Image 1 (cartoon, rainbow, N blue to C red):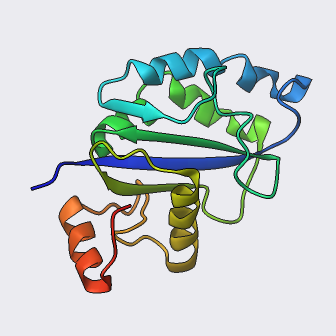
Image 2: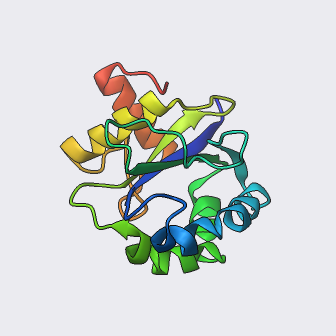
Length: 162
C-alpha cells in the first residue's frame, strides 16, 4: 500500500502590511514559529521563499490573504504542533493580526508521501471544503477522515490524490 502524508493550508486576511505596527507581534515571531515547525516531530515540508516564510507568496486575488502550507507525517503530529507548542500563542492572539473570516480558512487533505502540494491544489481543496463541508477529500481537525476513507471516496468519484 502507498504511504500517505497530511497536507494543510491555512489562510488569514491581515489587518495591515507585514512591516506595520499592527502586524509587529505576528511578524516578529515568524522565524521562531517556523523554526519550531521545521524541527517538530512529523514535519515534512512547508511553503516558503528564500526569506524562510511565505508572507510574500500571494495565491489569491486578494493580496491581504496570507497563506501557510505544510506537509506532516500524520494528523496527530500536526495537531500537536498546532495546539501543544508555542504555536498556540499565535493562535490565541490571531484576532490582533487577522480579520475573522466568514468562510473556511483551513483545510487538510491526504497526499501520497513524497508529493509536494501546489498552491493551486491547496486552493482547490479549500474550495471543496467551502462548497461541500468536510469530506474525505478535504477536511478539518474537527471533522477528520482517514486515508482509507479518502481512497474509498476517490474510487467513488474516480479522482486522484494529486
